[in-house]
Length: 156
Ligand SMILES: CC(C)(COP(=O)(O)OP(=O)(O)OC[C@H]1O[C@@H](n2cnc3c(N)ncnc32)[C@H](O)[C@@H]1OP(=O)(O)O)[C@@H](O)C(=O)NCCC(=O)NCCS
Image (cartoon, rainbow, N blue to C red; front, side, top):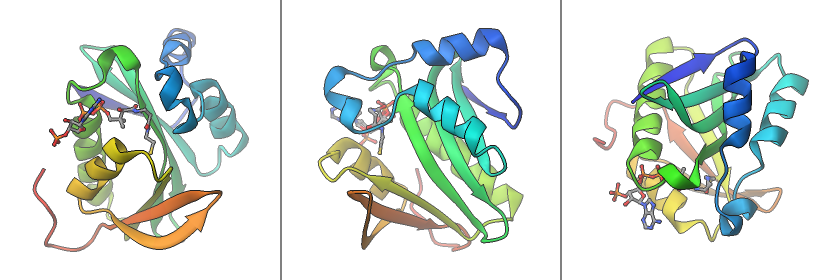
């Protein structure tokens, strides 16, 4: 498993493969489609980043980041693993690699995210990495944050 961080537009081949990645019907309320996420990363290109999660060079998932260097925050904007590839550890590994990479950048203090409260699998996954609920709600989603410069963090 490796993670590819794209700061430019995806190439045609990768773009189509990312568009083909889908969650289950029941999970569609948890995350926007990759088509929407790709459109939004284009619209907000100054601070949006796309990440393709690859297994043996094949896309298995997709994430987007809200990259706010001036505010020293890097938001986990969208996260998804294709339904065929869920439950194999890719979501967890991708988060682990991503958190390590952003810590190495030393540009950020905080990683916020938001999630639908009934998304228990995602909630437990984030909690295992040290994300905590702030009690705030934005667009009907609960906010969680991970401090990035604390020395004591759960081992994952
Ligand atoms: C949430 C999501 C990204 C997790 O990715 P994943 O690759 O399936 O998860 P992993 O295989 O890495 O498993 C991570 C943990 O979740 C658990 N898990 C994953 N799928 C599960 C399932 N269907 N039922 C119960 N537990 C599950 C795993 O057991 C693991 O727990 P552990 O660390 O205690 O062993 C993925 O399920 C997904 O894309 N869901 C739909 C979209 C979504 O909800 N996105 C997040 C928006 S907040």
